Image 1 (cartoon, helix red, strand yellow):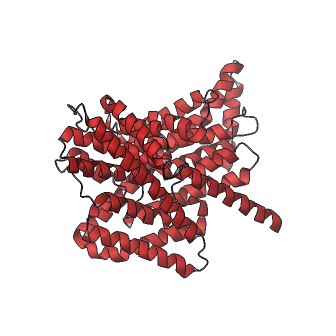
Image 2: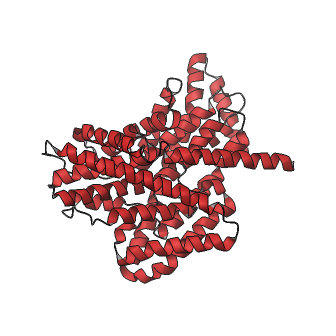
Length: 455
């Protein structure tokens, strides 16, 4: 804390020398966003490298000593769950619903509630739990966790501001942090901005658009400075697609949107059932069974069901082995359901994209499509499935376009997002994250009420 006080004092002395009040105010309002964005980019890169290392180790073990995963996977799942339960219960799951709940709470004086959802402890526990899950082969992603990590960074920077600092909206800080986190996780700056508008705010962004844009740019540039310029997936061939391929796009979008919505309903139902568990052995038994089901399917049926699914997407898009088996989408969806409901940390963004890719790949095989047409359906499946989870068709489209730099097919992907969004409404009118946000708000409010009664 002494270091923080010294930094505050140094900043105050430095800015007191500036005579132009307007310039001073603008700089003081921008600096917290810049500093938090830089920290977010560094943390996102560190987290991405550790996550990739964990996935590589799992693949290596599966290739050389696959049988040992029947021990490692249940053990990792239990440890990942225990770390969350013991040290930070609000670090479980994706992280996006927690950020959405924090944004809603930040408009009030509920600082203790926000601190439960976003904090340094959350960052540490989120990273440890999700990395242990990844090492065990969990079907999880790092993108949702990165968003909660970034939100925590921005919230903490806001908390460190001295009283003499010009007023900054905590709500805007958290929203900007979430956008920066997504931009850094996928290297998709436009996707981060659109995500903030479409999913987090659902309002006009005129009050903080400059802060949002600069924060996303700084987080993205920090990531690129450490990792180099890269695309999350690469440049799939979509040239010379058929004029009538949009019929296939619609079919894939319907299947992906409905499948994603069904997956969401199943995860919510399992989480509700698990909330009735009162004894430790019930949790341990569920986690062990879930882990054994996942590793058994991976060992005896298809190892592509493990992990975030990035390798699966790359394999489908950039090799001649275009067509997935009919059962792979079911394995990816089932693996996501079991991994997410364990109660450890881990996101659904990348698993959703890979599940959609496997649907597009399987449908392409049934239709015996060419390479470019198959790639287009794979990308459409990615957009469709992610839209079915988030109900944000524009965000899903922009993310996939930025991951692959395939702007020439943006209309096809927007069509996939729109159709998937409409199809998913047949199963549930609300997104998966909206349901979880409501649960987190109820949970944190009840905990605060119990705490106040005890006092």
